[in-house]
Length: 386
Image (cartoon, rainbow, N blue to C red):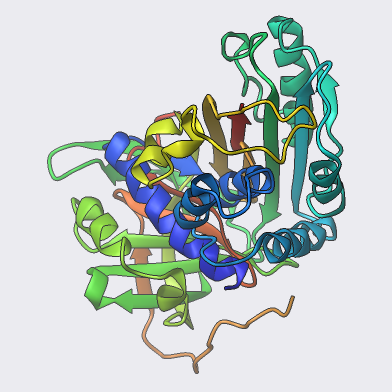
């Protein structure tokens, strides 16, 4: 199974659990960050254990063996090392006086490009500052307080962190002079004034009758990255759209996109989101990692029993006339989008009511996913603590 396919299935499951926990709230998360952190954790699970099985199924790793799983994540991480606009980094902190097993260190260093570092979690204020400073540096200061000192103590043994930062410029920028305050409908009874960007250009566009929606994909310059906005036809249609997206693959939507002339209205917005992911993981069938029966015998030389106590995810996104900036810390052949002859009909895409969106890579799948209920409401990061 390719990373893109694995990531797509996990994204849909993750997103809809988050929506259920956060109804009518602006949401942004990085499935890739979360999956990468859990791939590192998976390296420490005992072979053929129930812990390994639940991680494989919950993360949608499925039947990939550990060596192949590590290799595939290494391919993705190595790819983004060469990327000008998106950067990923991993870090593993281990309790002072404890040593990671040689096998665990080897796979983290060679495949996940992370060198484990010892830290004294009993000095929780200092430890949190060390971890948060690393996250800030890797996310362009967008994620500032991923770790609360209160979740660290003398029983903490391991902290796995993945950080991801994206700052992309539109291939066709919006003209700031055309941005003006316009109506954004929160529902069929309430509306606000929001800064609306305006543009008429050739974009990737599709009508999606099965979803009762339309899609717009805006490319970022010099990359295989795109912002995909899926706009329900009805002002109050986001909830129904999200239900249908549970069983709709990303590729199903992107394969329908064709280049057409489109009149676009898209709000400028910022969104910030934080979630403790334990209930989400439990809902995805990953119960054992939190229990005393968790089997992570391949992590420490000492062989001390370990379990996950917290998984924290923080995310941030900003969309404006120049492009998009997003960050997350938890944790190639470009396939062209099908292009059709330009039709004389000019399409209308007015994103003036709640919608779903994703930033995706044409090669590796979904990097960020979210929804926007209110552009007036005001980075991305995932953390596993054992």
